Image 1 (tube, one colour):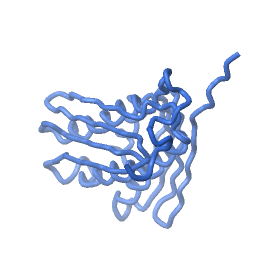
Image 2 (cartoon, rainbow, N blue to C red):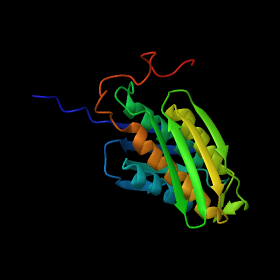
Image 3 (cartoon, rainbow, N blue to C red):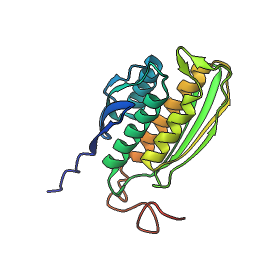
Length: 205
């Protein structure tokens, strides 16, 4: 009788003088989410991340929003990234790579990910407005940078064209979700192997 695979779940807590955050993930979920960051637009993007990756995601965050949204946005990304990395363990059996091209009305964005355990972000996204709702648009790059660093992901995000800033940002998060969904899948042909000729992910090329 074959063994059932171990559940790929993890929880992370982060407490600083600026934020208090708790994140839980289930990589083998169905896209169920419970999100409360205190930032409406960030909640919306985290819901998209969960729904389109099929990763169950719980986030409870409080932070110094009376100053600005920077610390909470960045620390949420760190915690989500750390939880994903923790749930992946040694990353044995994963597909490792994923890519998605996401159309959203007039906008088209492409995201590619390598769960290499070598963090890197390429961000080719230009936003024409300083804010979406109350959120500074410069914080979206900060979110993706912090997530890539904490998750151990090489991440390329490219908005090919678009006019509506909401559509541009949302298509980037949906692209991350769909590419992450591919990359975390267990490869049935190599379900027990580290997907690298080195036998380990991370370190130098």
